[in-house]
Image 1 (cartoon, rainbow, N blue to C red):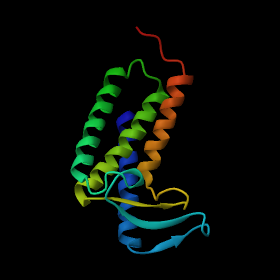
Image 2 (image 1 turned 180 degrees about the vertical axis):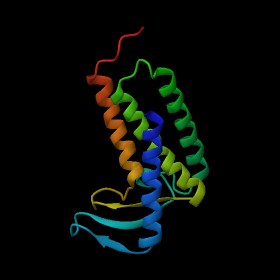
Image 3 (image 1 turned 45 degrees about the horizontal axis):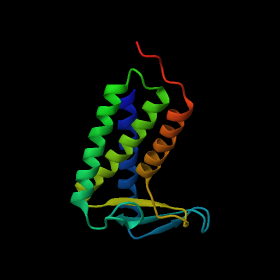
Image 4 (image 1 turned 90 degrees about the vertical axis):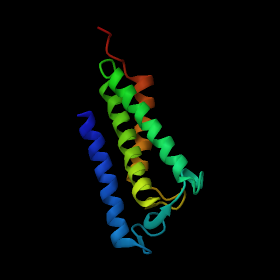
Length: 147
């Protein structure tokens, strides 16, 4: 289930990015007036424009973090909650989607624009949701007893 969730998040992210690349290049599509729109952006940095143009660094950092998270998930799976494993799957799947984009395209396609924060994508939603769920899991969900 864990690996399937990672694959699903990664695939959903890559499919939406490719659809946006093919259908919206250079276009802007308003969904809810100025509240929500799709805006094609080639993000060559990280969140909020940090590390702009540092693709090699971002690829290495993301790869290392994904390896660490996968190892953590593997070694703690028997004493982790389902919510914690879901959170890790979301973070890893989103990170993998953005990593694949960086490696294959040299940038990440962002397209969801709510106009009060930087434009983002499905991977970013998965990563942020996973982080939120991980915090909830660690602080509010009882872990299984050790055998």
